[in-house]
Length: 174
Image: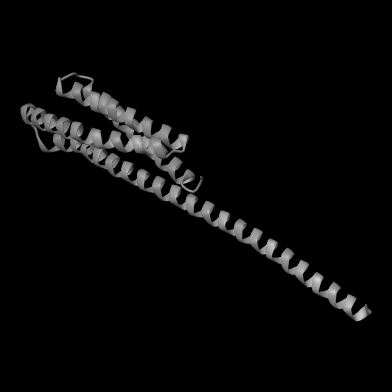
């Protein structure tokens, strides 16, 4: 055999080997790209689910907070104790109706996580329970009822603010 044939065989073999190595590299790069894309998509889905859960929780907490603010209106707008008591009872009923959706949203936050945000949502629920309980003391005519409620309402607002800060800080983490 002539050296030209050997050069041709060697060149052809090298080309085949180079093509095979290139296709392996391309396949590996494509697999890595697909995995990265799947991870990014999964992260985006988690982020969106959390965001939705947090927003729904905040919406329900806002409804509860609005009902708490109405207590001040009762004292400003109504002078008669009987009228005040009637409006306070209406507020208690509205708060009872608002509690279940808020608690449901807190459970969704607990499910979606992360743990720090879930703990803050549970703290808001506890503050809601305390404020609603304090409103009962007002309805019973307890002398310390109003100050007890005002204190519990402030705790509710503080814990809600902490929830918001924690949720904002963790919304992008997987």
